[in-house]
Amino acid sequence: MSSRQTVMQLRGGALRWSPTPISVPLSVPQPAPEAVPDSATVFMVGNSAEMLEVFEQVRRFAACDVPVLITGESGTGKELVARAIHERSRRAAGPYVALNCAAVPPTLIASELFGYEKGSFTGATARKHGHIEHAHGGTLFLDEIGDMPIDLQGLLLRFLQEGEILRVGGRQPVKVDVRVVAATNVRLRDAIAAGKLREDLYYRLNVLSLHLPPLREREGDVEVLAGYFLRQIGQELGRELGGFTPPARAAMLAYPWPGNVRELIATLRRAVVLANGPLVDVADLRLEPQVLAPPPRVAIRQSRPRAMPRPKPGSDAEREAILQALQESAFNMTRTAQLLGVARATLYRMLQRNRIELAQHYLVQPREPENK
Ligand SMILES: Nc1ncnc2c1ncn2[C@@H]1O[C@H](COP(=O)(O)OP(=O)(O)O)[C@@H](O)[C@H]1O
Ligand SMILES: [Mg+2]
Image (cartoon, rainbow, N blue to C red):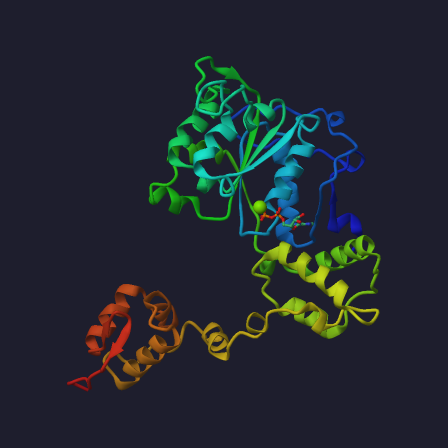
């Protein structure tokens, strides 16, 4: 595979704007290509169909001056995508300002975001500009948006709608021109259902949404990323290695990478330091053994065919199948129903008909069915 395919270069020179207009319900200003400075530095590596799609979305979304919501597990590259969008947008020459809502104490987020006026509270000895004002003419990245305190969400919404803010303790609205890119690693629909996120804010932020799949779902990317980072880290540490031994390669491909790209980078950094030979060996990777080799029960559960021949209702075979599925799923009803290939409601009828009683997810003394 060529490096052109695997590395999305975001430097000014390598830039190509997608000629296809994208259908969003708002005006789509075309950015001036010369607005992207040569200092643009964001590289994203990937060759999976999923990531090629993400790269395409980054190109298209960069050209639209509307909010973007990025979702994905921790370490999948959300912040990198936010930067990539900024660097390819017409705002590239402007500031890029990031605020992690989970990292700032909730009581401080208002003054961090909106700034404050002199004398607005004890200790406010001078006017302070907040992140939104600092991002004027550029992009504001709001990480972990699900952690934004609910009382501030109204203020943020107002800013998104009106393009103006009030500093804490201020009375005069201040006009700001900022594009907001938000990210979350939780399901925001759940946050809305739990009353932690305003639905109207969600819709405002979610004009364009981009999902980063976990690394384990990107076919072929582990190898490409591992090669890329091994070279990069080798240069950085002055220890350039020739690659990976076959067992190391196999282990990396089998490993599920719960911490995604961030974990891969940390693993390789450690491996480069630990490696004795010219290649990284499996021991140098120090992968978590329990994650590397899932217990066989899990493997059996996953590989079990879903559509088994259905035993006769009320037969011993049906009862056996239910008990086995319950055990295999650790008494998870949804999973048990899946294993049996029936709907949950059907499962409950099957339990009744076979007189299998469950109390607090533990099986209590299954009785012999009366009628066979
Ligand atoms: N596709 C990619 N190509 C190159 N580096 C990546 C890629 N995805 C993530 N990274 C790197 O992995 C680390 C974690 O990415 P980050 O954007 O902080 O993830 P998130 O915000 O989703 O937790 C960063 O060092 C980032 O540069
Ligand atoms: Mg992040």
